[in-house]
Image 1 (cartoon, helix red, strand yellow):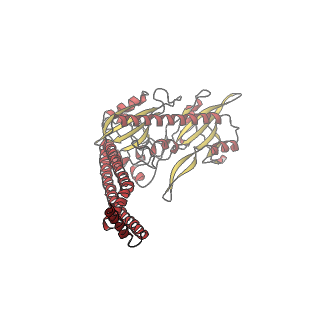
Image 2 (cartoon, one colour; image 1 turned 180 degrees about the vertical axis):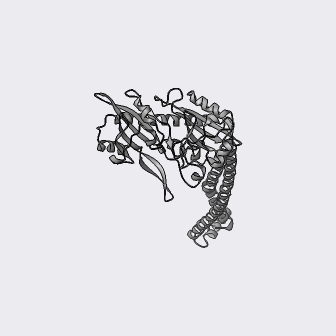
Image 3 (spheres, one colour; image 1 turned 120 degrees about the horizontal axis):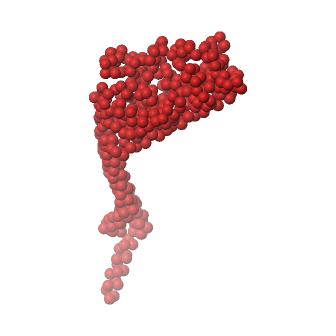
Length: 438
């Protein structure tokens, strides 16, 4: 076979190889690269989008859903206290009931985040109509008779100021008293050292026998189960976190019907008590400087007009049973908040305010800063992927052309080996003789 025919054979194989492999590979590479560009552009657009109307509405819906979840949870606790009124008046029955009621919470142990089952109720007690505790379960264990108290005196209660006995003894059958969140106050210095708020919510209802009202049954809900509804939420993302960071300005919180914060990433904003049972005063225009210097920063939104007039407006709207969206200024930052009422009602949490409300706030400036940073990171990653694809395509082309060349030469050698030496000349000679015969 001549040199020209070998070259033709080579280029013929090369063309087939190019059409069947190189062009499809290049097309796939182009589509992948184009896809990466589009994904990158979409991600950047989403990252730099300020909280538009759709995003705000989504956060509002999340606030409403969370508020409804809290209301359902509180209603279940009300059902529990009503069931407790028909328990046999024995320590074993009360202990079994208390220990069966558990719920998972997130905890951090040995630098690992775990979900563990924790009793819903810190206390469950039966109290006679004079205020004397006759049965009491605390932290899952029976309290000895010698340590039972007369709770008609608020000074004998857990937080030295609780008046649940007097409030409950005045109720009718089936009515339930639900306390405020009660707990020792955690100051800012204590919080920064790792201390966290630990409190309760009392549920109590009267019990009756044949002769009439015989006393009350009372449960103390571990407030960690209540705060868990907001502590793990970041309003602008679907994934939950162990602890939201208030420094980002992007977190959820809970407010009671009086305007007090009862769940917040910074526990020093939560309503709490001094050791003697006196309520730590909330910030006001007149007292803010002194209280902040002491690290006592309890917030009541009804009293924060000096920070921004819209804060009491939000609390007022929620107390009227409304959900909504507002922007306001707090500590020099523009804040967006979606709020929704917790529609749980009882004797001391009447309509329309009910138990309180859920707030989900976003610091707009900080959100925009983080969005811009995310956009730059995405752009950098897209460039990195694009460079890698270009390098891969070039390397693949070189490799594939090399393989094509080897295959073409191999085919050429194979054909040459099958034709006997001198056969080409003989064939040409025969063709010349045919021309002379003509």
